[in-house]
Image 1 (spheres, rainbow, N blue to C red):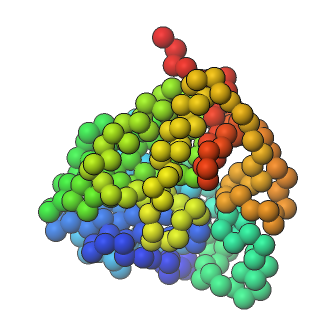
Image 2 (image 1 turned 45 degrees about the horizontal axis):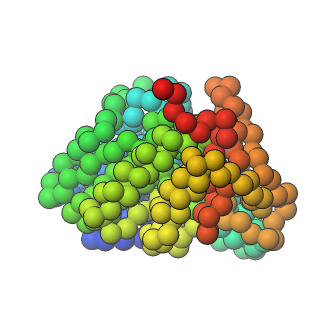
Length: 307
Ligand SMILES: [Zn+2]
């Protein structure tokens, strides 16, 4: 039986950050009537059982975007909400990728301490227990800009924030004054799915609504402690980097590790450009720019939106 012993931190009364063993963070928000689960991890462990230990309310599952480390356990439920731009290719769990991601844990978070994790088995999951998604159909609903989820006593609003993916969305909890940002903003931001101008417009909008939230939680905790929000420099720096690029100021930099915190004690070679081919054949090309602690990967062939 896959473990449900995820590290969990209650960040407010009725709001939990569920850490999928350093791979990905899911957030559970409970109202008086319903609960909202934001993202479902890579698929290591039994997320549904963990969620059901935290809340007895009916759970609505929403996805910030369609990347493997956010959609992994979605087939544990019968219905899910995702933006239509990101709906194509919403697939079942990729077991091989889930196991591989778990192997990257130490590199993302602990650098050279990988060996200690393996030696003392400090994490409760067994990768042999990662199984394929249940063989069933699920109902997929479309998210839209401004769509609201009434949980009873609090309303969560979805906003489009394209850049990291074509259909990336964020969720605003105005009652608790928290923005749940998925991968729309973080310190190691890949935004080469969209023109820089598009990403900039959406991140600027997040900034413009910052009187409605006090803190931002992104969908991984590898650049912040578990349960703690991003620091205040993250969003302004990301916007500033994109503004530089829009103004023609593009200075590629070396990034020691592009899947995690830049650490010097790493076996990865520095890279200035990362080229990934997605399973659907899309070629993702990222050149890294830097401001303060922020690394932002853009596609320099896509600066402006087409008129
Ligand atoms: Zn992502």
